[in-house]
Length: 133
Length: 347
Image (tube, rainbow over all chains, first blue to last red; front, side):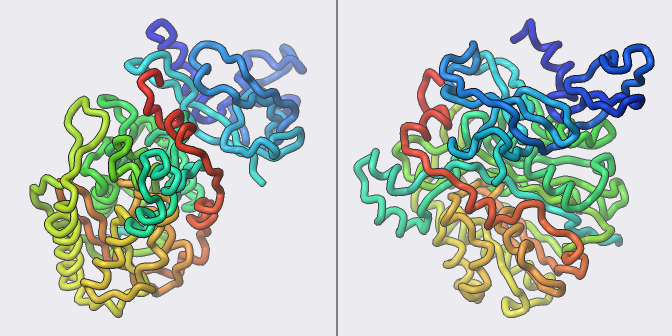
């Protein structure tokens, strides 16, 4: 974690507040932030934009074998969520009854712990989503 | 002197619940008897990825949305908790960044057992009244610890509430506040210890009842009011019984206490307890309603507030009502509870 601290700190705007990019030329939204609009290339004009806090599940998977730092949390759900401005992101879906997690389900933003590598290490916070009925 | 009042509030209650009878089953005790004795039938359990910082952020975001303000207007943030994720590193800074309220603001974490959040309200009132800030944010949030098998484990719960204090468009004016403080060793947690200690029956009369009664009586005297002037009264609620009993001692009816009594269905959320109770009352309050709120923190002290609900309340609806958050739940057994609250050494 000590090695990853600068990265964790740089990710705070993105992970805490879903700060992404919007292209003022074509109107498309991107998350995480991009340097160049893949749609408009050099004609694109990307500006920082806060993403909406609601969206819907496009696809999901239940994780039984987790990477380091997430092994205590299995089984858990990962989903690709399409936000209301059509930007997409990969996120954990928590606090939701298993039968409610399905394609098309409406979700809303939560603020949660993402990982910590040790009891004495820094805690990385960020976004997760829950299904809203 | 300028006025100060509540311009918005938000509550966060975790999704998971464990029943008192389930905890009692593990320890070979009579669950029905304990639930009836404490007046607590189930408690809210913060999940693996929740702590007092995440609860504070979620409650605060709801408060900002309800008030309809730009978070940049917030000039001070105070977080009251006795279960901070870090021993040294401010939760208030995390909340500030998660609200995009910074960097131009004052911020600090408070600790006064179960009344650190209401101490934050008083600080914000002072800053607003003295024109040092326009809006302040006070939060009480905890993921309360209880030693496995101890009496506290039946009630120690997770949850929190956030109140935005300002002077314009207040949904409730805070007319007066008063605090009563003495050095009383009824409950504590020593440095580096994981679980708190308490003094059993001693936590009643010389601690909770003495401080809550003294603060409430003095508040009535300052406000020149009597119990019948209040539509609702909210007391700190370590269990479901103490608030009803202290209400009777002061001359309040069960009905006046009822709306703000949430501990029976979510447990004792410590710094969040009286503030969630106040939010539950504001959820249904009408313009002109007078509310008395008295917190209690072990160690010991009580903060009392005399409030009057204004006509603004009809223009600002809560983002999530307390009763809706109470109803959004999923039961877990003791083994899953142990995992979520990291009560095993390996977690």
